[in-house]
Structures are given as C-alpha cells and as structure tokens.
Image 1 (cartoon, rainbow, N blue to C red):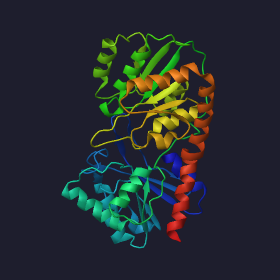
Image 2: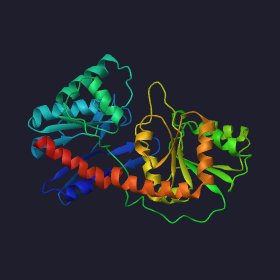
Image 3: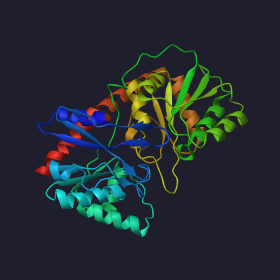
Image 4: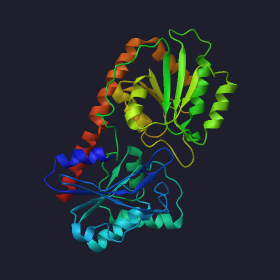
Length: 359
C-alpha cells in the first residue's frame, strides 16, 4: 500500500504524513513496520490495542495521531466507518484539526446486521466524514441506502503494483497449469475448483490439466483430504504463501488463475486483488460471480456462477482449447490492470478527489 502513497507524493507540492500499525498480522502477512522520512513523505508507526484484523475491538495507542503539531488539511483514514479506529480518528480530528476534511474508506458490500454499539460508531463516523472512498459499486450503493449523501468515489484502497507485477515471459510447459492464490478458507470456494478439475480429469484435453494451490489457512487439511478423495493427488499440489516479490514469478508460471469465491451470510468478495495481480503478469483469469469479481474482471476474463463446478469446468475447457481466446484475455487483462487498477492510477484518482473536497 505504501507504493500508492509514493506515487501520490510525486504529484504534490506538499507533505504527506502516513501512519501505519507498527505490526500487521492477518494470518498470511506478519510484518513489523518502522518510521522513515522520505522527500515530502513522513512515515510514522503506532502500536495498536487489539488486532488490526478485528476492527470492532482495535484502536491506535495514541491520543492525537500527531495532529496537534501537523495540522493537516486532509485526514484520509483507510479504515472502515464502523471501526473503532475510524471513530478514534474522527474524534481526534474534531479536537485537533476541526477544519481538516475527513475521508474514510470502505470495502463493505453486504448489508449485514449491526449490533447497537457498531451501528452507533457507524452513525458517528459517517456524520463526520466529508467523503468515503468505496472499493466497489455495491459498497457505494450500501452507503446510499444507509442515508449517506456525501461523495462516494469508487477508488479501492489498494490495487496492483504494476512495477512488481508486470508482464512475464511464460515458461514452456506441456501441462495446462491452473492456479489459486490466497487464503485457504471456506468462503474462497476452493473445493469448487477442485471439483471442476475432477470433472475434467478424464476428458481428452489438448494439454493435461494440473492444479496449483498457493496459500495457507484453516481449510488446508480439509482441502488436502478432498483432493485425495477425488483421486487427484497426482495433479494437484499445495504450496505455502510467499512474499509479493516471489508470488509474481509464481503467478507467471500459471496458464490460468481462478478465484472461485462463495458468498456467505456475512461476506462476499470485495475486490479480489489476486485477479489484478494475475492479469498484470499476463495470466488469464476466471472468477465466480460473487460480489465485486465481475466488476473487477470486466471483459478481461471469464465468469461462472459461484459454487457450480460444472460451469467452472466448462470455462477452463474453453481456455485450454482456444489459444486465440487465451491470447485475447491476456491482452485485455494486462490493459485493465494497468489502466483501471494500478497503484499509479489509484494514486491519481485519490489526488483528484482530494482536490475536489478542498475546492
């Protein structure tokens, strides 16, 4: 996410102070962060009380966020409006920088029931916010249904770093390698992908099919057992998660990437950044119709109804059998990742909204 801020500061004649949690741990990424000053960019870190992945119980260990001395014109908090951190920042702004514009961010695209305390926090932060960046159209629609009438620009907090994830030369491979990258949890629908591969295991395909699952999570043992029961042990492999610098190369070795997410009563896909990363390195993508996936893919990939392994198998067969389609989706994917979701583009759109709210 720091890459976006670096792009932003290159286009400004002012200073950005960015504040990060001193440690981030979401199950896949566990990283300690330090404060560093760059040209017109001050990087600060603050420890948190509670886990940053538990927004209703976590907040920063500070009373001011440094606002009393910094006096910002804009406070851009990439925090959900129903989080304690967003409420904490809104209160600090009221005391220490009351003239500053307050901008929040939301990924939430599902109208979930809220407890009274969470609903109260949401009411307070939305009343204070001059705008809310939305990661997807459904998130913006949800804010409108909740009575929010100020601007809701469609700008995800993070897209794809196209300097790191760029078009790679594919290694020659007799197999057609399908990949999944991400958390191994039930809502990601990885069992649907395994079932789709099983549907094609006996088909006469132009190239033999191989599945590579990269990630970690609570469902790993269950998924491994599912592979064994489907008699797919020889054509499915599990690899552990790796840093972004390595995952770009691993993605480039795939012939297709699948994100088979499945909607639950409390969650549906909010972006699917792994799709953007695959598109940027030149890998065709297939996604379910859960949440924001069709919005992200646009005309640069293939869609199937979530949970339907047979429909996913048909889309995989289309890619394996049609090199012209594969080449076309590869080209479209690279263009879409760069032109609509690159960190450089998101930085420019963020700055455009800064200027709008200041006017």
